[in-house]
Each structure stands twice: as C-alpha cells, then as structure tokens.
Image 1 (cartoon, rainbow, N blue to C red):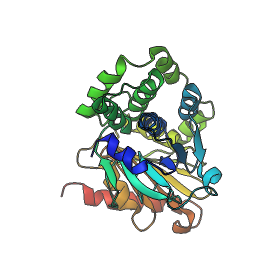
Image 2 (image 1 turned 180 degrees about the vertical axis):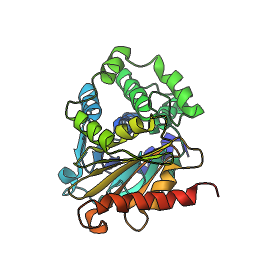
Image 3 (image 1 turned 135 degrees about the vertical axis):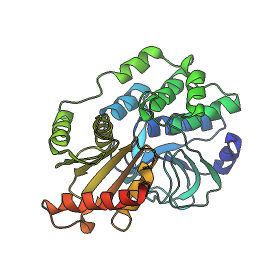
Image 4 (image 1 turned 90 degrees about the horizontal axis):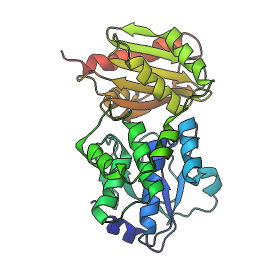
Length: 326
C-alpha cells in the first residue's frame, strides 16, 4: 500500500500524530517532516512527536535549519485521546525503541525488519537504506513535487542513514537520490554535513578505543558513561572500520541501563538478528543486516562492576555461536 491518498483518508477528521522512535535521528526527522508536508497537500494537519531526547548535534541542526517542530510526549500526554490517529515512521510498535503513546496506531511506514508483527490499517514496511527514501517515493508516485526544504531534508536523512550511500543502499535509495538531487538546496545540505561533532564526543571515542577487546573478528567496546544513541552508533561505525573487525559491538552504561549499537560486515552475521537473539529475555534489540541497536535495563543486569562486561560479552558470543556457520 503506497497510495498516500489512502493514508490521508484514514486520517480525515481526527487529530493526527506522526511518531518517530524515541531518539530521533536525521532519517527519522526527515521522514516525519516529509510525510507531514505531503499530508498537508491532502488537507491533513499533523503534529510530529517522539519520546526520549534529541541528543545529537546533527539532529538539532536539522530542526533549526528547517524550522521543524517536534514535541516530546510529556507535552502531549494530557491532550492526546485514544481515538487520535498515530502514524509510526521509521519505527514499529513493540519494536523496542518506541513508547506506546495514547492513541490509535493506524499506520506504519518503516524500513526496518519486523520482529513483533502488528496489524495496521495502513502499512508500508520495506527494507531500504533509509526511511526517507520511502517518503520521497510517495512524492514521486503522487505527482507532488517536494518544496526545496523538504527535498533537502529527505536527502540529508538518506545520506546520514546510509553513511553517505556506503551502507545498506538499495535501488530505491539510489533512484530517490536522483529524484531529490536537483530539487534540494545544495548549500544548506553542505552546511548540515559540516561540523557535526562536539568536543565532548571525543571522550566517548577515547573510552571506546581504550576498552576495545577482540574475539575472533568481533570487537567489543564499552563507554563507562552515558552517551547519546546517535553517538554510540557513530562510534560503532568507527570500530567497524578497523581491518581486524567484521562485527562491532559498542555499548554505553547509563543510569537506567545499557545502550547497544551493533554493526556487521560479515555476511553470516545479521546485526539485527544478533541483537534480538543476544538480548532476548534480558532486554530488546533489532535492526538491519548491517546495523542495529538495543537496550538492557538495570534490573536485568548483574550488580555494578566488571562482571557486567563479562555478562554482556557472553550474551553476544553465545548468540554469535548460533549465527556462524557450523
């Protein structure tokens, strides 16, 4: 179901919320914003929302550059009703990275694998490099041309989630790049891509480098302090760039638990499946073949101390034993 009119019809006459995953990155923001602007053309007004934090400089710069308004759930909880329409974008209900808001999740547009099937009244879940590519295709199929800001935001989201078109790229991603390229603001795009690292990020890099442990071709790195989701993901890309590493497992200790990011270049190791298997019963996780994320709460971890690292390493090594060819 890729007909935007059908989705618009489901939303007519209801308050509409477009919900991303809890820590929206540029792809999630671009996808939600692009869908919001497209639904406006069909007479549907909507609000963008999330739970968690906008915790990466690239995401904050994007909100400022395009004057995008996204509301945290705490501002909306008192006004939302069970009959309000919710569209899940770049996330899925029960996927582990999305809070269950008050409202009716009628639709889902996402590019991640499904681990907990849910019946939506409108569903478009396809494996692509970026969710923004799906939204761009809606414009192309509908005959509506995105305005300059929307095209730029979508293209930026695509570039960020595919690591400059080097990760998880599909034919649709390349087609939509060609579609958006002539429509976007090249100067604004270049500005967004510059200076996306903060000085404090270097501490996290240093901790990850100092703690790295190699088991066969799998590299484990721990960050002993709270680190934004997006930064943990970037550091896992960095660890994967090592010649000796084909699977990178990076995790950050937080007040409420441990955040994980996994990257894989091993064709026999699906990053999302690895996370789902390793954290099953202890936390939750999932993602694509080459990348994924997860979380374990403190109540499922051993007492603080070095044994936590041993526990985490064992979870993944046991799961890897089940992934690798016998």
